[in-house]
Length: 167
Image (cartoon, rainbow, N blue to C red):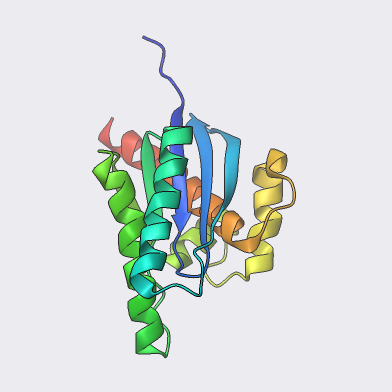
């Protein structure tokens, strides 16, 4: 039986912009599929923006049919209200694939940066540069989409490590 590529959806949750990126992982080979952002209308209420985020991610799931999903954990900042709102967006980012019965993994921001850049406190520009090296077909993309692709790459690498340990 020949193994097939695993399609992974990476999500970088945010209430203003949620980045998403889809890659295929086949052994050590990573292939870019697509990426972008879901951008809810900021003039709407929180509940309506969360509904838009849900709907946007559902469209991406339907279009790209990922096998697995990975979401970046919430970065806790100094503003508790911002952290709470980000957590709500993150909840939607985890809910949508879970509703589709797609396994969802979570990764800390520093682990994502360390996996992709080699440094746990890398800047967004460094992540973007490494995405260009690792997935050159992605072309010029925004920071949110680059972060989402970094989450997907992190999942690809860590799922392989788990598989090797279990073998």
